[in-house]
Length: 167
Image (cartoon, rainbow, N blue to C red; front, side):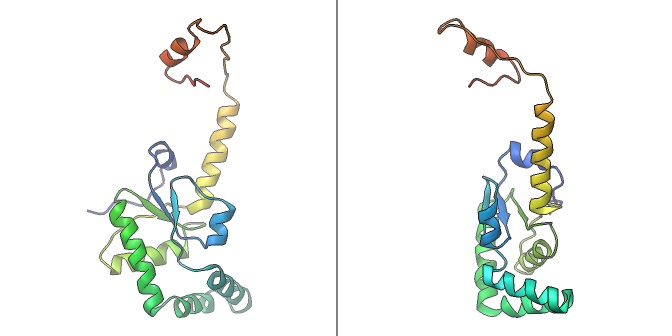
């Protein structure tokens, strides 16, 4: 039975759900999540070539070039890596920058290899926005700082609170 694509970003972070990041290594290096593993659809140079083609010749030509660059043994090797990740992390999800072409191509190739693996709707951009919005919301919440002498029971009291954080 297949799982739906993920739109509940909170549960991904709260449960440390494994994520397969399809973005190029250069993108991953500029920002990634702790529970993500970079298994890119394209290398940095392949991504750059596809991006240039997109700007000069449009989407269809860029997609065709991408399929030309990632085919045969290269494609088989990448699909094998993705399969290994999926089998080791059956509760995980995959994502690219916006949950677009790269996620959908990866998902399709995995399905052709016998694995139905869901992706994060909106990709890295949506996950990042969720975290920024969450930080903004938390910053507006009232906070209480507990201070006192060593041994006065601060830790015991903080640990009794449902949302207490003992720093």
